[in-house]
Length: 291
Ligand code: KIV
Image 1 (spheres, rainbow, N blue to C red):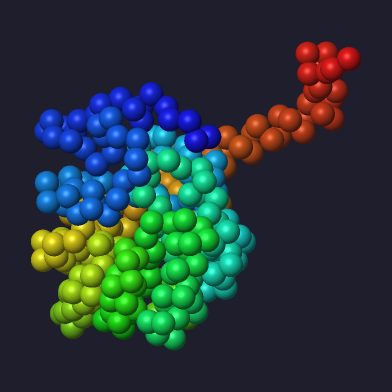
Image 2 (cartoon, rainbow, N blue to C red):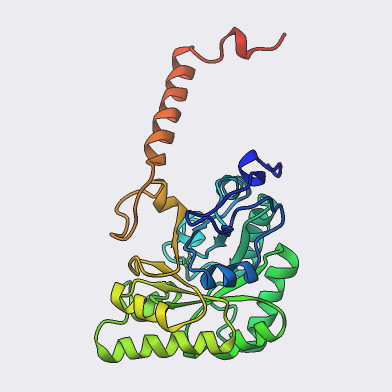
């Protein structure tokens, strides 16, 4: 799982011939400085969530420069209805697995609801666990102006922070799952939130479910990269929840998701075939037996 593939060691160039974020002969992990440099040269990059070592190793080997151990693990991995019940213990365990499964991707661990809202000191204590016990290289937390003190202390303490504004799922009980930043007042607030997290020292900011035009304006205004999810095509990076992107999530997925595979169907038919083989005696055969 931790072997480097040919794709990881082969020199890669971006389309304009410059050095790509996940390219070159490098075998070291991507850092937040590499992310900053990518914004400076106008390179767009992909981010995916992951919650376990094996899935994360596939994404790393495929060239995903940044992997988020999102608290979407709550809905997509742990069987909760929302991200609200996810605990810091759970995030620490999942983040450690993702770190163990990867070699090059920058791993960002999500601070779950209740682990930073009390204030900067609580945020530092929680982030320190993710960095020391799980080995993540950065943390993410939700909130703009309301979280700027937390971001500032973490950054001053040497912990890179990815901020998250727009729709913030940990506040689902207060805001629901609605588009954010519509209308002049809400748009101005989103811009203030974006500037607040940049001023506090965040190295990147997730913009979730905001109008494409507003996300484009935020992206032009900030010098740190914006990572869009349901925020149009003009952000510096794009993130998707992996179970949505690969079609493992059952039921409806949000409009902004593009499905690149239907793993639910692939896995379902394989499992049915296995069950039929066992019931009908077609598995195991002689070739699967030892003597
Ligand atoms: O937890 C998560 O997966 C996220 C992404 C949607 C950005 O926060």
